Amino acid sequence: MLEIKTAKTRRGKRELEKRAPKLVESGKKTLILHGTKTSGVLNAVLTQIFQLKKESAVKYSRKNENIKPFESGGETSLEFFSLKTDCSIFVYGSHSKKRPDNLVIGRTYDHHIYDLVEVGVENFKPMESFTYDKKITPKEGSKPLIAFIGEGFENVEELKHLKEVLLDLLRGEVVENLNLAGVDRAYVCSAVSPNRVFFTHCALRLKKSGTIVPRMELVEIGPSMDLVIRRHRLPNDGLRKEAMKTSREKPKKKEKNVKKDVLQGKIGNIYVPDQKIGEMALPNKSKGVKRERREAKRKNHGDEHAKRRKEDA
Image 1 (tube, one colour):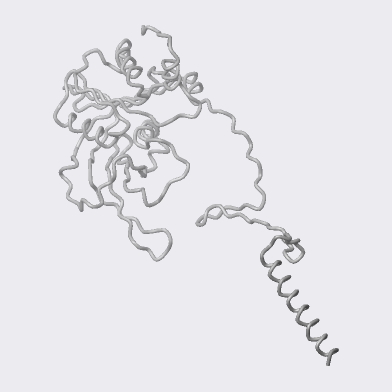
Image 2: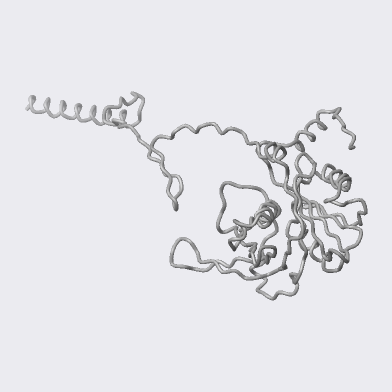
């Protein structure tokens, strides 16, 4: 059992609060681990997964003998590393005669194993094997599009579970608004059979379409591989219910004179009352008023002088 430590300083309490389970989750970090034995293909796969998630991933290169995710007692070291690095998703690679090029992708809740999916890697192609225009290379940390193609992701239990895990692994931090100009990559997952998925990474090229929304083209930049599902373990109902708990959203107040448009976004009407400028009282010290008074005074003085001349004549 892991020793439970309590914070003694305010800084330590703040760090523990950051790591505690939250109703509204922040971005999830990924932990990448090696097993006792790994192949060259598997090492390349783990390295390129780390490159795709470089800003939100932790990679350990040492071999771990005690980690056996599907066996009882083999989860302790995994949960320890999850707690140490504050990672809620892990990718564990191992290689054996029975299960060659084996990849275990799992999630944790409160730093305990939540669910597991075991896949075999076949037909792997690294990024270096693809030729493309380097100008369209996706930026590091950009938000991806994720496409799942095939009815199997809705009907087959294993594929539905794999879809959930891949979404959490690849999507990064959840955002409400997204700038279309910043979307420069896409992950495409195609269900080839009930237990096989073709995975590839593509760059997005924006072209003119004659409308506001540009036309998109996919350019394969790698890596690509076939994922063959071997084993999977779903969470129990009690743990799932606890992990899926959400906060009650407060009803939003209705905004008057505001409407939303698909293209223009938020549009509002502003009503300005009549200012009645003609009835406004001007201050006596105004320069314009003083000038008008001087001019009127001169005019009156000139009229009086002309009147007197007439009378004298």
